[in-house]
Length: 114
Length: 114
Image 1 (cartoon, each protein chain N blue to C red):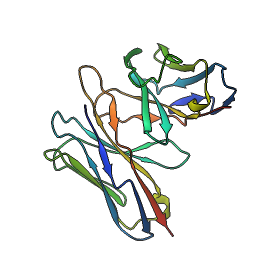
Image 2 (cartoon, chains in turn orange, yellow):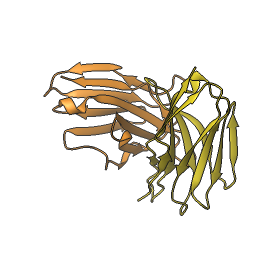
Image 3 (tube, rainbow over the protein chains, first blue to last red):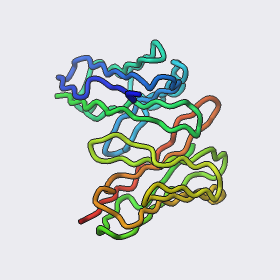
């Protein structure tokens, strides 16, 4: 299995631009998680889908952030408009969804907003 | 609200030293305890998933124990090596209704000096 795939690996954009991060979970996994790595909060959960349905989006910072999962093999995290404080590494992870199931992380997208 | 805490926040040891750190979690409504290893510039990788009180798991020089009654888990590293330098995260599932998100600790950052 190729593991969780994220694209792009690096993104540099200017303030105000729209940014779209993409994730392909491991085939057969029914839970997908978007995380952000921050100095203050460590690994911060943004949103969590189960069977393509958003279950918990309490970590989404504000209306500028949105996430979709149109099917079981693809998810996007969009930031519009982007701001410098959004600069971070964004991870996508997937799992089989039970409390004892490991989450498998993608390589992350390093976002820099100038 | 489930709160997972880790201590110490950081640790510096010499190569060959053995070390351990702690993860504490609420003992009520316990489902599982996850340990992850997160190397700098990489993605978190699962070490162990523990579910039973008294459980002990081992992977090479790394082992973990679990006490669900008092709400803590210890991670031990025997004979630390520079390649063990990483942040070690623990997490416990929320498991409220159909919400299975992990509640993460802030991690223990381990630096092993050669």
